[in-house]
Image 1 (cartoon, rainbow over the protein chains, first blue to last red):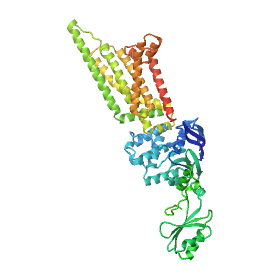
Image 2 (image 1 turned 135 degrees about the vertical axis):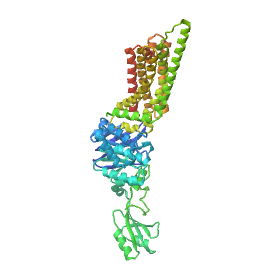
Image 3 (image 1 turned 180 degrees about the vertical axis):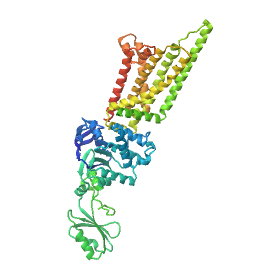
Image 4 (image 1 turned 90 degrees about the vertical axis):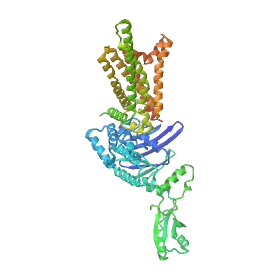
Length: 326
Length: 255
């Protein structure tokens, strides 16, 4: 659905994007992850035909962004960083205007407007001026704008910024529902968001793609060692030394609350069964035992710091067991 | 509804929601009304004087009222029309809706034409309201309608040219005040070219410079002369300004 090949964008001397290539299949949700100024917005602007690339080609639904911009624009719904709303219009006036620009009219326009007002929960504010709405509502009006003409491709630049937690969950749910029928690219710097809604993550830093994979694979690939968190009710004095004797355990840290241990183990070796047996036979009162996976935050920091010249090993996987998703 | 019509409808809505049109419109109509009143009173005073010295008076309202009035309105338009056009693109760029417009499936020419047409309609409305003044004068006096109508044609063409310069200025910047001053500046330069042309005299360069100014073209129309040369000037100037606006909007994408 979207194919980007070797795209380079230069502003004078400054290279904003350097030979970026990726593709998005039909119905796929792709997250664009990167620190500020990494080139996320530039990529999106090229895809939406707002600006041309210096080199390389971008194709959306088979149409070239440089040669057939109108055809591409018809198939894209775009939500820029700042919701592009006219403050002096009401929500319905604005959506009607957007629909007309997309060539919708009559019954088609009315049904599309109702659908989006319903879908984004804008019913109560539809006759109010956008200028008087809160940031969250404006963001939703912006999303309604992007979805109005039912595009095949959605490009969302930080779609959940400015929303409250409940709205964030709703929007994520909405994006998940759109997957399958729509191809979605969303940029974000909120990492759990990428994990929550996307099938694939592209990490971009300094104008280059530094990693591209599923969220799970990315963490797996970058894990240095397996980590296990262990909580015991009544640990003995020799607990750490006895834990170390288990085959595959390399290191034992005591951390945080009493009775919690962090075990660093050999890669690709699951020692949980052994540890459990040891804990039970020694009567330590096993409360909790879980593997800690590296979160996307860790991967992200590692990759983007590496970019700044630090060794990839400089950042070790999360050492605080509490609150980590498993 | 075509995209151009959609843009016109939206811009008109934006104009009439904001106080700008009402303020600018009131000031325009007030000044035009006041000037018309002064010129009529002045003409009346002259008529009384003539009556006392010669016993009878035959004054020419076309010369005493309308030509003066059309000459004055030219200057008022130069000041107020840039206020109307300044927001057209500058505001879009400031409020980040520019990107939205340019990623909509419509051409840049449709955007430029739509925006120009909307402000042109606002201007026509304002100008139409000043039409009350000759209608009222016609009730109480006799004058030749023909030069009045060609004068109005001149105002319409002059206004269109001023507005297109304003559209261009607005496309150049995201600051509305800057846009207004740039268009006032450009229009003053166009005005003063007439003076420069006169200074250069009847040479080829002098004539060319004079031709570039709107002054003589507008004067012809006010005097009741409809010459194709003048119409060509206004239409080509308008087309050039809109074309330049198109180029500026297009190039703004690259930054």
